[in-house]
Image 1 (cartoon, one colour):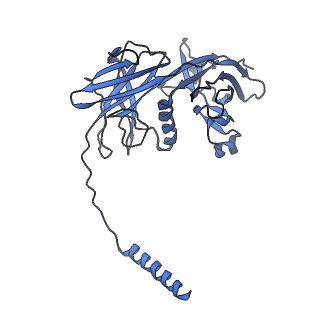
Image 2 (tube, rainbow, N blue to C red):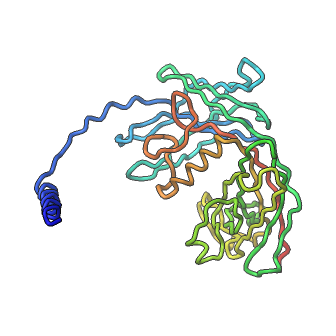
Image 3 (cartoon, helix red, strand yellow):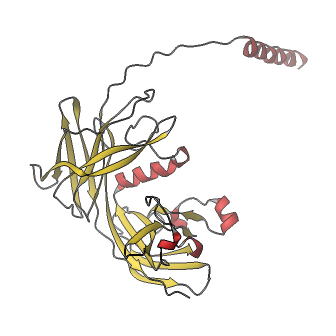
Length: 335
């Protein structure tokens, strides 16, 4: 036993010696980056198809991705062999895209390629992008059927500091379903215009995912956030009831896109907008990856190499996903 201790002591001492006195510098030769097309778009049943086309940049580059202006963008469905739409650049509306590299966040000017086709539910769509300077890319997505929301209830009495919202819906027992809930507030400005802002959601719904014990300790809720993405794993085929609370002091959070927020220009908010979305597994995978990497900030879906985010684009980067969203406007009775 004494001999064994001596050997262990010798090994430990040698480890310290080499750890302190030896340092190896390895030079890595980074292969050149070959830019690829980056496709980003979300099909919705409420509007015409629109996507942004850019190119990738190396994770070690100080440059930014830029908009591709002369691509051929073709949309297909699962019925017609030929394209059902050819998307063209909409130069009338500049889109500022948040791009984050290792050092800073920037807003990059981009434009949508827009079509004339409004996607419909319960159908597969495929998009193909061609450009003479890049390899062609493609991606597919499926838009599921909408879900009817029933028995919407508003509670402004139980707790004067909270607005309670509840509703139910019937889950399809024959397939795996994916959902998202977002809540907005709508406030009228002086002059009649309205502004939309995010609402904070509070809930103890088990299907909303793992328990945040920090939030539970300080708020009494297992979920606190601006939106929630979840599956039917815990209620497959059931008539599901959802209950949410909205803090009254967060009833109005004017949109971050308003350049100037002047409280005197706002009337009291009078409307809550419930957005309930269904989507397929590719869309769920994308939003889930955003949540998993939230601690790294706004994700770089337009460069694709800085943060690993889900991508379903063949031969390129980005995402082509879809959602079937419906909105219900609710006006709580004020006290």
